Length: 279
Image (cartoon, rainbow, N blue to C red; front, side):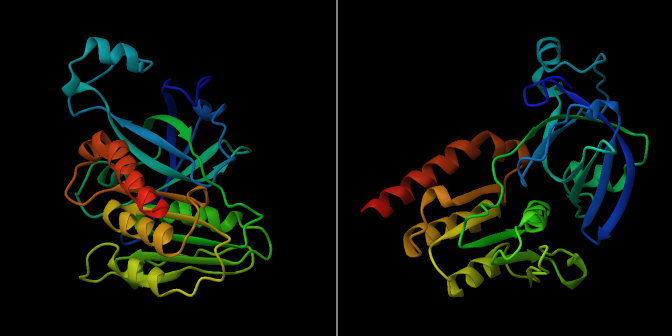
């Protein structure tokens, strides 16, 4: 994949799978197509998996420009973004973790039934965040969609780093073994019947912050992310450049629908809150 960071399509093969919890499945991908994968700089590296609609076959190798020129829009590949949980350049293997809720969605059910030898097409990797080793402390907050990135960030923390990680999941069975090199584990919040993110917002609002010298990573459902962005910027006075924060998904929106409006939605929310912060 000579242009891994551009729009060329990478190809990998499912090497092995593992059920981590009732709602999390791990896939390890390998193959010669990962020779130039090039991840490692960020802890939120991600790939965009490409899924051909049922019954549609593209000429090999996949070429997005050709596909979009030769096929109607309804037959273009559907994209789903997933965090690179781990990249092993020695074994040429990339690990992806998938949230699975039965037959809900596209990528989750696919991951639950994927078997070794299956071909996977993707774009990437992309990425933008890694823990700042000079930060006074680190705040990591997210629902299960952000858990792979939070776990990767925790494992990258320098020795002695002060870390507060809060992760909301369905229930106790979805807790995973995650920790920093110093042994700091996340605080697990069990959602139960509450709205997604409600417990996270309450927990962060109730926290006693050690200082404003924080590097924060806050991702997950867009509604609670918006609330926490407002809280961190306006009530806690955290500088914008010290926040990695955005909605990975949004209740009531399909993945395609959310992707179509995400950039403008995030920009509008950020502009409104920056205006209030400057007032």
